[in-house]
Length: 427
Ligand SMILES: N[C@@H](CCSC[C@H]1O[C@@H](n2cnc3c(=O)[nH]cnc32)[C@H](O)[C@@H]1O)C(=O)O
Ligand SMILES: [Zn+2]
Image 1 (cartoon, helix red, strand yellow):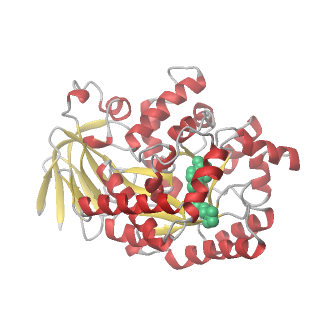
Image 2 (cartoon, rainbow, N blue to C red):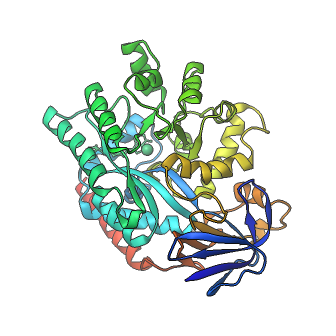
Image 3 (cartoon, helix red, strand yellow):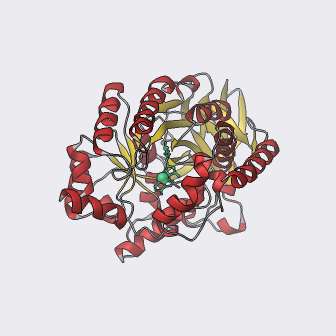
């Protein structure tokens, strides 16, 4: 069945906006045509709105929605070791299912069509993605610090087994990655084995790197090299790999990234909330490093709204560069759409015939969005997730006129609330 999004404006791959219809086909999951007066089996109104690529949340821990507001106002190391890791050790598979469904509901509502997740009990995440209809690059997060050898080996093995068994699930909408948590929370030999497994399976490596100075300094002290040089020696940072943060980078690391071309996933809200620092986004753009955008988990953000994230990226980027012209709106939209699809190695990110029909329609009718001088400006500086009217993934409508079709919204919220309360009691 074909559907035409009618009477709206369209954001084109070159960043220009014009009035046009967009026709997509459910059976192929592709955009068929972009133009005037397109006929189709059915129509969906985009009047007063803008058709654009769905947003890509390139780094999150979806089920951490259950820990939203559980522990705030602490730096990364204390937040993880005193609050988050103890709570996570009490997580049950059904908690991950409930937290992930809540996350997917929030994503569909706020226009995110694809995401990368690193967490545990990942089969629950696959099941949630299958049901909700999004696209995802999923991995079991591997940690060895604080574990005996047997537990560390088991965690590595689960990372590898999951990457093998889940790749291609949900009619190909789920693909996998290998996720050593970071260069300091995973020991060297486990890192080597994880990277080798990723190469054998042909999946990317997704990790955290250079997030805080507390994480950079021990590597420099122990090994005499910067973290990214250490990772590179181990075989990391191929062009299909991606890592979150990249807050603390020196000149040699910028060069390494420009040369090797992995994607860096900027997470501005998490970096501000945990006071991790300001990523040199303008310098990364100037160096031609592929960039994407992520919310990180909901416990360090505290929402999964990629419109918020775009605004934060632009504003923090200007502050970091001490230059109001740095990190302009067009660059941020590119990071949140095509850049995210590139980072995750998933289809989508462009409104053009033959591309995946991963589309959203954003309303421009709110007082906050009036008048419209420039659609691109509003997307970054004025819009919110609640301005999204329709969400489409792989040619299937997941939200029509703000009605989320694959999930029972009230049931998802109630289950998440109950599960979160019980988790907090156990932790
Ligand atoms: N199998 C691992 C789980 C790793 S999942 C990924 C982890 O990243 C954690 N996390 C969330 N946000 C951040 C961040 O900003 N930096 C580093 N870790 C984070 C998250 O809480 C989760 O524990 C284990 O046994 O501990
Ligand atoms: Zn993270």
